[in-house]
Image (cartoon, rainbow, N blue to C red; front, side, top):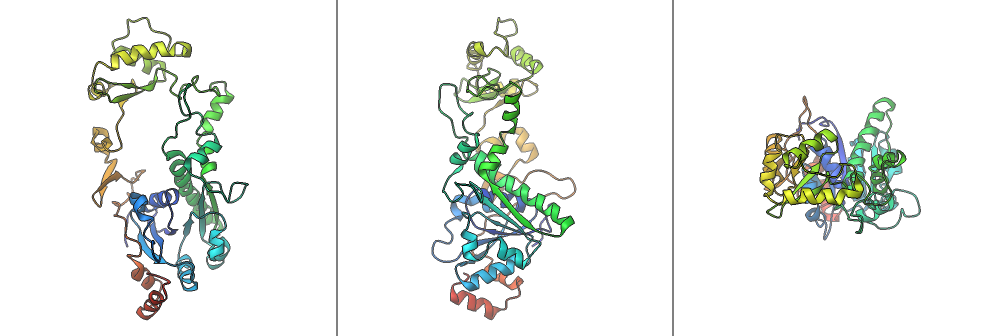
Length: 381
């Protein structure tokens, strides 16, 4: 299968899972990697596709029962030809199946074996269950998000599953591949959402050390305290986002709101932030969101409409850059980032589990009789 993108010569085997690992593999596939998704053969084997949906785009699928000797051998034959294997099992599960790093690297010493978990491969919590909210709670990424008088607010599952999880795993894979280009050897990438979401707080740690970030919510520039870094309701009940941190940008905000001659509290007087917010809120409430968007469209006041994920494609900037695309009838984000010489191909719709089983087995050198035997034994479907 010929695709475009800077990773067009990369072969990835993905053991099917939920959210973080599929997202990381989606990023690799978007950028041109040939990703073969290994789905579970047997009843319920297609159950993981529905919640993943868009995340499963642009790969082929083979359905294997990894609990059988024949199924494991098929997986290992895929590993023989792969650059990368990605799994998102709890620690120890792959080893018990006989497809852990030791077994796979013995077959292919150049393999990059990427492991995507919440807690990592070691540590007291490694064998425990968890979800995004748990990982970012323990990493310190959740506590700063929320109002001073409220509770921490989960930022959907963006920080743990996707930013600190799948995306960081994909970067780890690329780093290991870069190192392999000189050493000739593969290695294990231990990507943990608790580690990745902690890494995303690096800026906050730096601000705190410099005395520019208080531990308590309600005293910091980016936690919704500042009047110049918040959202405001408009006349139609929709919102605009204001983020004019720099004084010259802030001055433009005040000017376009018609408040330049008003006796306002100082921009950085957080003790008077509520008073300043009240002035801004009163003005923003006089017009609908899209009218305000037009007022600030050609300015550096850092004011933008707050769009839902399902209207963002309509904004002229996103439309001009084709930030969203339609794949299989579903509107979704387009591949990113962009490349000048090796642009990515358009994404392909997700495949049902096992759709490409026969084709992939044929590429491994198995003839029709061998495929028939594997199907009859239940090792593949």
